[in-house]
Length: 384
Image 1 (cartoon, rainbow, N blue to C red):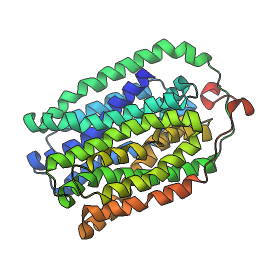
Image 2 (cartoon, rainbow, N blue to C red):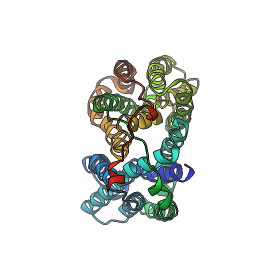
Image 3 (spheres, one colour):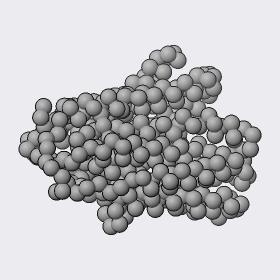
């Protein structure tokens, strides 16, 4: 699990690199705001749309090379984008980086599930690795691009290539053991999985909105400096890492569905407490709290999704880690309209009511049956 958590951190580092680098294309390459939004869209589409077909392939065939190749492509595409001389080439490279990120998640989620051995705590390490990578990305990229220019993105190619090699070697060492494992699988529950996906989309809308507007809320409403606004965002993202780890441990104690419901319900008071507090310093711990409680269900939903689709763990991981998480970005234009008329606080007040929908949707979830109560059958990969 250490290897898979580390690989997930490296892969999602490049998801954090793209939004940190886009402003430098505007400042140093004179790209327009429309072009800048196109770059963000390229990375999002590349990482979201291929997740389901890649997941289906990962469930049908072993494809041990897919996650090492994906993580390498993510780093190479994002790293070379700062050196590309023209907008179409930058767009293509960021699209390639997004596809690389998409290639990593389904097979990595499948293999991490096998390594976790049914433990929600172990899966929380894998999920937290991605949160750490996304959190560290802007923290490392921003000072590098500040001092060396947008071409400094190339400095971040080696970690992806190195981790791709580590994963490839790991697959070679464990190939015999993995092939000999016969997993007991239960019946797929597509309707439960559809309800879980709806919960994921709602939560993704909240998470993406918080990441977008929390700094602006500190700067515009609380009249804080841009540095303090960045601190609020850092605390919110850091709280997300802690919440992911807490959720895994909580699920092993009280159950996965109850943990999801607790996390969704806790978002309501946490968000409103942050919005009620008008002191820019006293509100900082509340930003940490918001990040913590909003991420309690994150790793649990990944494992629960794979339990609802036990014959297709790669597809389930592709949806829960990629497609559903990215879908929240589709609602950002609506929040942008609200923020234009009522400021960042207005956008956050809308987000503070959305957890009600997540709570209602999570009441349709049920704990999956234990594997020993289900008939054994081979996975499609094992049949192949």
